[in-house]
Image (cartoon, rainbow, N blue to C red):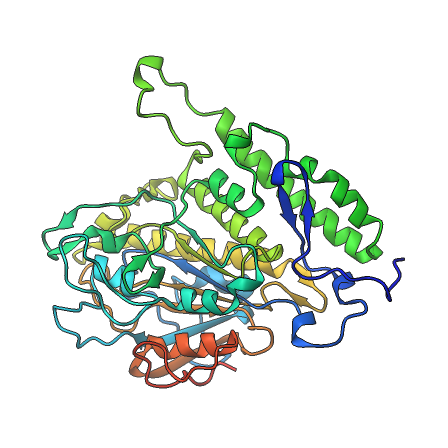
Length: 444
């Protein structure tokens, strides 16, 4: 057993390897030996966002009843195994009276505005403007404590055209994270590159060894100094890192061959997943590792961009392109496929929550020490309605949230009130976030 008096491992300690590679640490009880019981000694608080585009079936989302005894709706059935860790929040939306010059809704303006709440500048060019998003406000406050201030992920390439129907640039549909009012953040959509960003191993290094192999000497030194329980935690963590590496390596090595004459200018980027389902799972795994290793405490994941046409027939043959199903025109067949896709997306959110819930940090789990938002910038994808947005918030916020309930607020309660409540729990001393009217009550 290590000497508790001389142990000085900190939360920011990383396993260093060759070629500049580093591997972050999971939560270890040994980190607390000899430390004073201060806020700095506690497990970190994380904020994550899972964004689903193109609205939901408005007839099957809202649960029956309120409080802890509510009944899950059809769309929310995937929450069943983890419902005690989730808040269902009804009647939240952004200001609906902005007018056409600063739209708050729609496919494109609504996407950029989702985590902001100020409305976007009406533009058909590159002079885009929105506001600072809640994730970036959080990252500005806690980002200096981690390798990456924040992590932004997606599954689709960016669009640069103009939507002639909405008379607005499609640039607004590419990102939900805004560093400044005029700076949306680019999103990483290639799993391998996202993994490399976290652990510092890039293709230009010309080294195909596992990040674990590259840090093995450091790992072995650490294992000799931590407790038996921490050795078990370290083994579990390294197994999860290696498992994800193997998945990404398999995808790189098993790309469908392309005739050499067709390669020029069209070579697939490394790490492409074989299916959308696998792509989502890999990004969820990367977010899980990012939080587990404390590489970042703020992460957002767009399951698809605005107007995403991802074909959901891999889930069920009744499904088609997501955007096409969203414009269901009340047709039963389209509504059925739309509903199946909605339930699938909620299920991927649950997959992420369950992975965080399975990772222990002392007496709590990573999920207990997190606030994980799921949402959409529209309610009904057919009519583009943005009143009463579909919003879920999971985790216990380090003991600051009381999940397992359905809370019904007054109609048109500002979604920014929730964002203000989240930021205050992240440690920001603020009284307003963009167009909030006060901190959202009832969460604790």
